[in-house]
Image 1 (cartoon, rainbow, N blue to C red):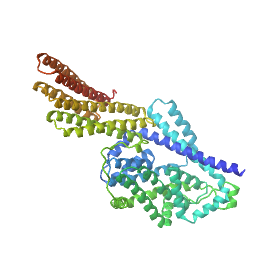
Image 2: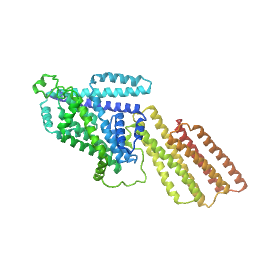
Image 3: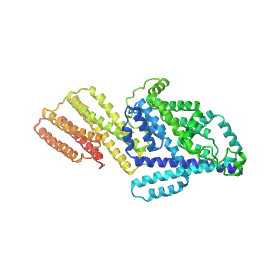
Image 4: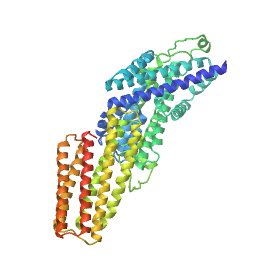
Length: 562
């Protein structure tokens, strides 16, 4: 009978926790789909103002319901050089406040609506044709599963009310707040979700198995434990990103130390801000009467725990927001040194943000724009080599061509991984379009390589073009360059209205190539050009035409036709 009891409790805890985490995942993904590009726009609002950074962190975390995800994103941005250490600390401070919304939701007395929410959410997801309603269905479904998991965990803890072993452990922890803080931190590290551990704490407390002060001590520890995710994400990143993760750990640890030192005052502040007595007990079993007033349902304690979580993070933020500079210096002192520069690295995309698809797609788009600008530079450098024959240019050109090839591989791999996430249909189309775009840009780089090798061969053979042929190559190169620059600019501005101009420009390139090819045949007939010169000339014309064709394909992807 004892084994069956232990098994029922264990299975209830594991199953309830699994439902809780699964519900949180579904709800977070639904919220991200509804939010769409708003998160990118919010992050784009970042400035050096630490207060704006804090509100950005708060808003993004409120949208995606995960401070760990926000912090990991921020570390990725710092690693890519898109955000400074000072900016990042401000955002992470805001994320700490934003994550408290989850605890406030859990404190709501709406567990009885979990099953209806699952039913309605499933109905919207399966039978609605409107994508917004489908995403709302996902949010409602995740919300219901989350609360059903919380109720399952609470039910699993009910048999423990009569356990002498648990009561003794509870009394031991109650006498040592530092042990409770450590327990909360370790539990969060194991589960890798502060929201889940807060849910477990609330389930224990509302079942009467934890006192208010012990619950708050556990919550403080959970705030330390949640920083481990960010520090794990920082492994393998640059020094600035590792310092950001360390700063996150530092201000949570220092904040917990401060609150523990004035713990009675903090508890009194929470109690005065929250209606109801957290120690009020509703005894539900005969066993609870035998054990005494320590065991029994505590209906008011959830709000007190949620408010303690919120108040801790608000106080912590208010203390450290003016001290961001000192916090950054402390992180630099603990992790001294300078970053080593790499010849090639991904500047924008980071696999750590794949679980936040709208942000991930924005990063892939930024990396694709970077790739497009590199191909334009390659075309310019190739023509500069055509004009001056400076062999030193070849080293830089070969390096850029290698970078373009690497970008194509890395961006494509990133987009493939992103496509396997739970993303919207619009986002799926954007991913496919970007894959086409990246492949066409890589082909532009290949044709630029072919052009500079043809030019090098022409100079090795010491067979210069005639003045007429030289002018014709310059004319076609100029039109091709203008067209590629036009498409790259449209990509930067995400301008979907370029099709008419793009068609006109690529048609002009094709017609000019035909005209120049015919002119060349006429020169061959009159003996003005040799056969070897002619073959190189024709190959160069074809190379510029191919650059124009792939640039047109990129333009079609910008318009949304590809």
